[in-house]
Length: 390
Ligand code: GDD
Ligand code: MN
Image (cartoon, rainbow, N blue to C red):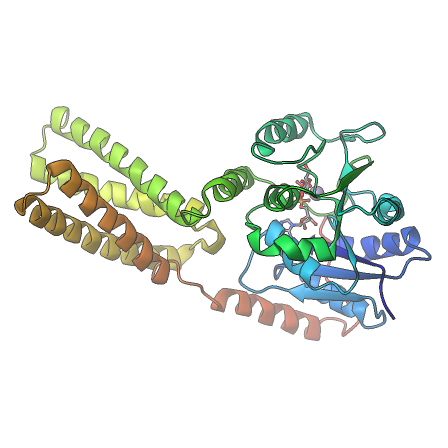
């Protein structure tokens, strides 16, 4: 059977919402042949297991379980590309998006021959619902920056609820950044001119089960998305963050060193050694929680990471001094010699720590999965569902 519509539902810890959203789609999509694709990032609460169990007696349901990956936007991209239907809707799995407008979105796309139909909270008939005040403000702020350089007008570029024509999506899929939360914005900034867009209003609902994954880092990812969309052809975003942390480190270094020399009365050599040590730890902590937040090291691995980080960066700094000295000795102007040394260190430190300190680890997620499987086997057998998160 051929499907008319695919629904892509990105999930992270939504086990309590899987059953309800599947039921609601069934209610809303009577008479439409549709498939449902969950894209789950190996949720610790076993969301993917819940979907697999439901999928046993439904042909139109499946889950892509991504191991060692995180990210709302990239999950949506992979889900869309896995669809068999010609029209693909993306919506949240937490019941905040109103599934009852899907038939209208589909009708508009077909009748008006559109490429993209966006569920909007900001046109007549739509609303933010009881969305917290600060979230409304944040959304408006994001909107103000978002469409810089875009060729299209959108009333709600922050929405994660839209329908896209698969054949159109395939044309620009390789240009997408896939960073962070704002997949619709990514699409509009990547698609180029000529996209035919429609909007259908809806009222944003409150979340009932589970928690929002929005936090400070999502704001950072928003910044990363914009950097990548505007500079991505030139530099890698993670390297930009690593470099920003490093630059901050240099500033902090000078401040601490001055304090130690002027106030503490330390000798230059001691002051420099102490400061280097402090700043190295600071840089490690910042990179671990910002640049590599998706692979964040904790517990003993944090300590191990700190050691490899210090070793790698120590070598990087030694090489920096050697290279800069040599360049200077051969007649390079001092500024250029210094910058050359610094550039070398930046690239070296980034490259080496990405392969050692923050290399991809598989063990922890495997352990979690084992525990889940063992728990399910010990529990009341196969039909048992993981506990709802409330
Ligand atoms: N696969 C995957 N990976 N899914 C994720 C991830 C992730 O890293 N992070 C969040 N999700 C899923 C959630 O499980 C949920 O189904 C959906 O993406 C939205 O996440 P929420 O955590 O509920 O986000 P929100 O309610 O704060 O934000 C929503 O509203 C925004 C409008 O202001 C999202 O829909 C945004 O896309 C939307 O722009
Ligand atoms: Mn939500």
